[in-house]
Image 1 (cartoon, rainbow, N blue to C red):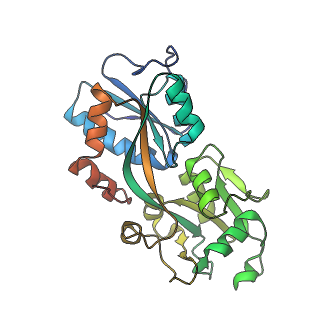
Image 2 (image 1 turned 90 degrees about the horizontal axis):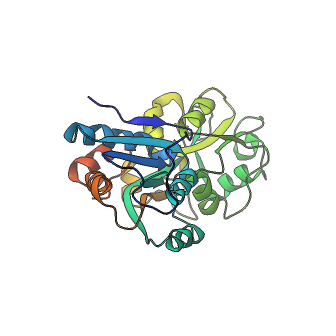
Length: 281
């Protein structure tokens, strides 16, 4: 069975003339971007290539911004993004003679995670904001131990970083004490090893982590505290939820269209659920 190529950090790619789409000739498809989507996309690619063995689908991570930049400069056919494309990015695509096309391929909830031994089981949205902006630096403030909070966030190229800043921090800056990591997996690993740590990751990574970390219940306003699960994301009761997108320059054609169609097919959407995210079809 052929395996998709997964590169978590950006890698050197074939060069192409700016603005031409699709970039790569033959039966090779380059998909770059969101780290949240990289494992899900890899699962799609493996099953897709079983059905179409003459094709090669290369999946590269590095962050939503990296993927959209690759789409813009002609080194990717499709861009994975865990945030919406910005107006400036859309304008750049239009300046190349294309319309940006968005496909929502899954739903996700961002789980706020702590070490399993942390006695705190829930926080409200304002408390999470206070922690990640640096207003509150000690767990004692919220009934935890008298210990300094160790913050982990994604790096600034991440769509999760941008979405969390907009949705939870209300556009405020992250604390200068926050340690920025390149992947969801790195945040899970770091939080699982430090009793005073807190971070955030996509829903699929919460499920994958199992009991290595604890996902906090989150309360917004006067509403109930809600755990990040497939069901609460599906019914829109978990407050830190979002769509996961794939972007193309113009309507995808050829192998790119076949791959998008597969992602949104019944089989592709079952893979979404199997990976711990939420199907949209």
